[in-house]
Image (cartoon, rainbow, N blue to C red):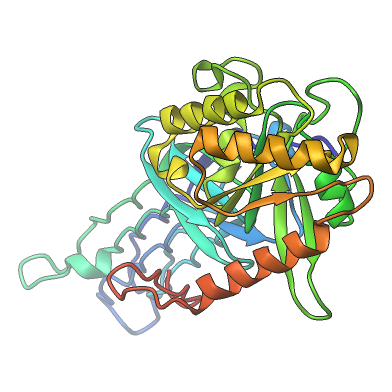
Amino acid sequence: MKFVDEASIKVEAGDGGNGCVSFRREKFIPKGGPDGGDGGNGGHVYLVGDSGLNTLIDFRHRRSYRGERGQNGMGRQMTGRGGQDLCIAVPTGTRVRDADTDEVMGEVLQHGQRLRVASGGHYGLGNIHFKSSVNQAPRQSTSGAPGERRALKLELIVLADVGLLGMPNAGKSSLIRAMSSAQPKVADYPFTTLYPNLGVVGAGSDHSFVMADIPGVVAGAAEGAGLGLQFLKHLSRTRLLLHLVDIDSTNPAQQVQCLEAELAQYDEALAQRPRWLVFSKKDLILDEEFSELRQEILRELDWQAPCFAVSSFTREGLDDLAQTILGHIQALNKTKIPEAQAEQPYDPLKP
């Protein structure tokens, strides 16, 4: 299935039903008076998280959605039926923007979470509401209000604990293939990865974490070079970045500094996220050469964060890397979030 992480749609909530003008007419009951009922409310439009979806490709084929209109009021003070809400399934991790104002309306992060994106119109009043001592046979009613109409921009940002960052051919796809069951394309030319790949990495019998692989980043990506910033956004929800560097490449330290500058230019908060250095393809050079080169690179970068050396071909260092990542994530989970910054839990009963 083709990976699509952006889509534009139009949503229209249902209009409210009109109020009814009616009078009670029964045998032996003269001047029965008004008995027109109210209309029903229009149906809302919701986006609902579905963990079984992983792309927005369905919205390339259908772009317009409409909630059900409320039923008109009827005689005998009968209220019209409310319009049925429209629920649109989206992948978890979807961010919703108003296409006209570019305002972020919300995010759908959990399976079953509902986000209202358009409210149905309010019902119209029947003529029974207009009865008074001076107007005992009113012929007034109100029409239902129109439902909200919005143009939306949907952005899918993958949900992962760890993000892989590096130049093209740094070994990111090989690493995620070796550590998980993901099967991204691997070849000996740049940009073999054209869309993000997710893999679940097992670290022990009952522990795991999710790793995301994105296309390689080149110099000038923040201005649109290569695949540009199209996929850098998929690292925004990760809790840890693994910066992969091909130890057998030219000027590894310069490559690290180049990507650091791109990250800072794209998003300063992302540049400040915990980032570990991982030297890949260690099997391509001798141990003595690697030790000298590693010390030289770390000294040139003045690197203080954790550093690892791995080989996806021989699997050297992969278990140690997985266990260290798992320990870091578990420590983050135990850290108490300040009450002012804690995310409010989703309430399924709250509209």
